[in-house]
Length: 258
Image (cartoon, rainbow, N blue to C red; front, side, top):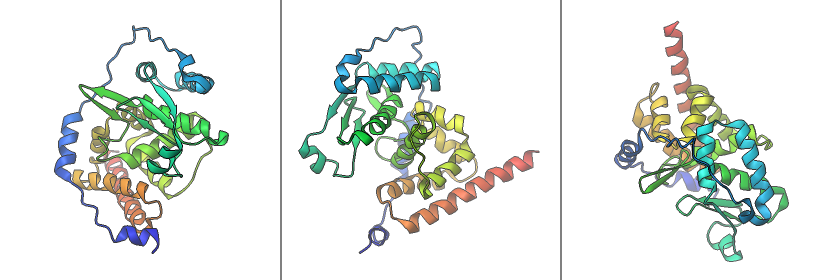
């Protein structure tokens, strides 16, 4: 059975109440401004990854604002970078995964040992670290809301930033086109601002200006499913149609204001 046929046979139920509760809980989440604090980083602790981490930080300084940079440095000051054991490579993530970031432990685990992919994998995970924001006893990473919703958009948008600021070769596929439509609706700067504030609720609110909130939540939830099942062709057709309608509604609203 083809993987997308298997996917179509599975019913994904979106728990709106749970998601709406999480949105209410995190709405208005803001970064704490500690611009006067000196943040010391011991780069030697990163061992063989030291030079790559320094390169990432240098590029980040040039690309993002002071508030975003300070949050990145605070997280970096306690970050650990480890290499996965052979058992982890197989039993935890599978052979196709190259690395992951654990926001709770503030640890990057690198799976790949291929020099060709180590840099882009590490930079991808460092962006996850940089977009992690603490609120009370919880940590929120980019557009991933408690591993309940937002994983797909969070991963693809992180890749987009990697291409835009860190010279990763651009990848053009149907998912990246879907993300580009989202950026046209929300705006590049606004999306970037919300990503580094770990503010998925506000991203939903931006899209909900042109579509019913539950429909927007369902779109993002389906995007997660799409990320987990790459060949779900039928689903991506539906998502492209939904995003097209949101974009057209924005254009219509904008034209009516002229």
